[in-house]
Image (cartoon, rainbow, N blue to C red; front, side, top):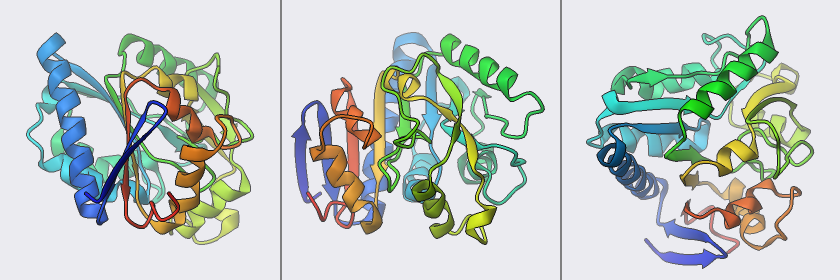
Amino acid sequence: MTKTLKVDNLEVAVYEEPITMGKAAADFVQKKLTEAIASKGSANLILATGASQFKFLEALKERDIDWQKITVFHLDEYKDISDTHPASFRKYLKDRILDDVKPKKVYLLNGNAEDIETELNQYSEALKKHPIDIACIGIGENGHIAFNDPDVADFNDPKLVKLVTLDEACRNQQLGEGWFPSFDDVPKQALTLTITAILNCKSISCVVPDERKAQAVHNTLYHEINTECPATILRRHDDTKLFLDKASATKI
């Protein structure tokens, strides 16, 4: 680790490269899950997706965690995408961790549900019944957390899950990461946990590698706390740790 700092409530740790960053984040998440299981016999976890989470999820699978006592949720899913689509976040999580660790229970947002409103309501009810011990999230190039882009982000959102329209910067990021063959193929809408749902989590692990995220990281730490950069709200959470690699920390 090369650097640590604290901005408001937000703890920040910078590592030499993504592998050590991912391992450190996995250690942090393992500790929170183990504490929850010791305290109440079970734990509730939110997992993120995207290229930023690769090294973290690889490391998390290697940790000694009692997955049979853990209920897993995820942050978001594209609307009208099946769980067999290469860009599906449900598929991403099944392929990269869930099929291997086999948690006690998994709740996955169904982006191609026939009745989206019912899907949102049912997912919200499940979240209410399973208060989250730790959420694993990232930050988008436009500063979003989950799919709460600046235009739709609400720090006092009355909902826990909602349908949103993705902005151009967000869609370009999905294209740039290689999930879709063209910009027109990137969905225009997604189901997402709201900022309210994320802030309700007891602890948050935020993993953000890569130089293309450097400006978003800078804005998260130094921009005024508002929805122009939704991730700034993490500075007000009681227990959030931001994990960076040297590339994503070049502007701090």
